[in-house]
Amino acid sequence: MKKEVMLVTGAGQISMAIARRIGFGKKIILGDKKKENAETIAKIMNDAGFDVVPMEMDLSSRESILALIAEGQKYGEIRMLVNGAGVSPSQAPIEAILKVDLYGTAVLLEEVGKVIAEGGTGVTISSQSGWRMPALTAEQDEQLATTPTEELLSLPMLQPENIRDTLHAYQMAKRCNEKRVMAESVKWGERGARLNDIAPGIIVTPLAIDEFNGPRGDFYKNMFARCPAGRPGTADEVANVAELLMGPAGAFITGSTILIDGGATASYYYGPLKPEQ
Image 1 (tube, rainbow, N blue to C red):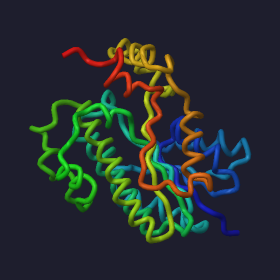
Image 2 (cartoon, rainbow, N blue to C red; image 1 turned 180 degrees about the vertical axis):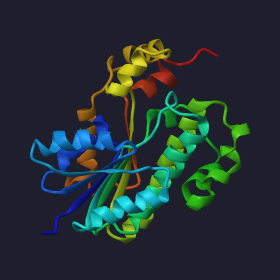
Image 3 (cartoon, one colour; image 1 turned 45 degrees about the vertical axis):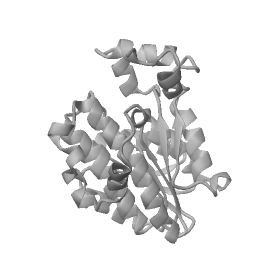
Image 4 (cartoon, one colour; image 1 turned 30 degrees about the vertical axis):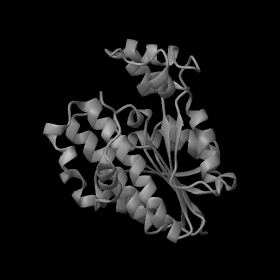
């Protein structure tokens, strides 16, 4: 029996929260770089009545992305995409961050956009980090949005001599995600589908807890303590936004980025988190 198919990348708490919120009745294809992570999440969800197929998937590989799509097409039309895969500044070197978070996301949005069903929807998870760097020029923004995917990593602004550290690489990747969503949403629209981006702040996940207890822990704790919300967020709160964006209530929203960070970015520019000059 054919089912509507949801593709999910990244077997983490945010991906699972979104999939549990809106993935009922669908065939969910869950890809992760570590298949055992996908299998763990799949078991939790299948034991709760969902229909999840775990598989190994490397976001930095077009071949792997195409394999994920092909697996989904075995079961029916691809109606939803949730891209929660990626690496953080403390997890990977500059090259890997750009290859996975920037290039990989661009390829995923491009390839799913070629097959997404009419009425389909997608969200990709970027980060508040993309809002923390100075504005790029209009030309640079357009390059990030529209450069052919196989030429992206050759852009001058993404060369090693122009990337300060892993945090800067991560910020560039997330800025690119937002611009890419804008450009790809136009193409998705030609198929009657919508695409948006969610930029979370500090969300409590096992990875975040590791960060809280790591060398940058005081930085993160200060950030959520001094933001207007006064706390970190939860994966279910990100799922609230995804449910809006991917459901009928969000039918007029496409090509947008929703910042969900408890006001941390606002505080960074205009409040107690503003860096000292």
